[in-house]
Amino acid sequence: MNDNELRALIKQIVEEETQPGIPIGVSNHHIHLSEEDFETLFPGQKMTKFKNLRQPADFASNSKVTVVGPKGEIPGVRVLGPYRKQSQVELSLTDGFQIGVNLPVRMSGNLDGAPSVTLKTDAAEITVAGAIAAKRHVHMSLEDAKKYGVKLGDNIAVEVTNGKRRLVFNDVVARPREDFVLEMHIDTDEANAAGLSKDSIARIISDNN
Image (cartoon, rainbow, N blue to C red):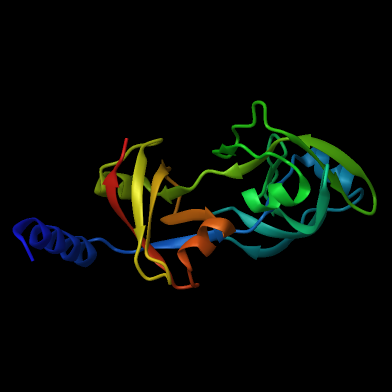
């Protein structure tokens, strides 16, 4: 082992000992709805909670819809709460291939020019101009952001070492906010690429802005 390799090994050990692991949340395809669109798809119903999610105030609802594209459909896609100002459909790139939609990789809420899909229930169907593949990101508190030396919108590199396929994710967006809890969000395609399990964790290894 040469000096450079030894320094790299020491740096890795120090980082692993001093930096707590970041929990990884794997996002399956899901939908955010405006209150108006929810009432159209589920007339006379209220959005009810199926389970809480890690981020405060966010929850998975009991409501599900079918997402329809030019080449197919995906049934049973869960609606997440609370209501959003604008409806948004988050799918993996594999989902997009399946239904014939070319998904842009975007941060949540960035829907300009995003393709349209149809959402269908037994009661109604609507067209939503807002289908994206979510860009990977890390939620964190403002204290966490200070500790890691990052700010909102920074691109960071995050390493996953305890999956079946050790992997570094580059271009991960830092999303600090006062009420956020530390958690990395990736989709099912990315999780499968790293062979992640339920107890997998990640560590920030650099700022790659």
